Length: 219
Image (cartoon, rainbow, N blue to C red; front, side, top):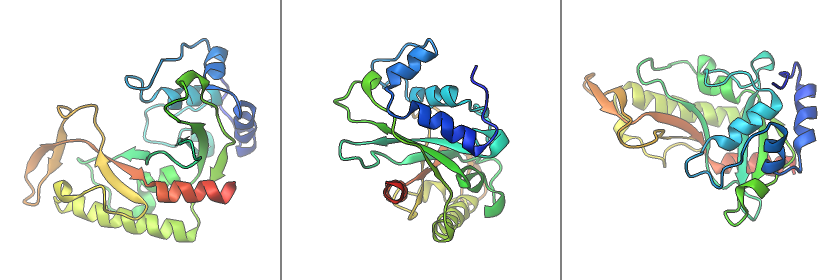
């Protein structure tokens, strides 16, 4: 077991030690096998880095490094060095809908984030993909203003029973998308008449427009 970091400095030092390493090298340090691909191991890379850096939250709705309030997010990059996909932030609790931004899980998760860039060119075998230099980030006032606006508009629709009307095109930085292994993984929601319905679980995701900006600011 890796000792959890007790400060931002400790976490950054640990992250700098794995920068430039391949996923295979990190897996070897922990006696783990590297899957051939992520088709059936979608969360494997994130779990490997959580283990390597001493994250403690597991699946709990808290920042990964609980003692220092920092969330860990991987940032897969395509061959050009740009974010390859949107970034999952957190699941949406449809049975207990949040209404205050300052108390929301999204704000809690995004207040302080350690971004770990990772090569994600499909032509590069998973084991050979390298880790980049970590970025410790907090949203500036303008970024938080946009995040808050997106969150409030989307949560208003959810609270009004308009979940099924939300599309991935809504939101400047935040978007709502289904978060399920398959179409049979249903959860309880509410329609516009206040009736209970079964629907796909949803999650908040960050658009690449924001993560690309974070990446360019640092590099």
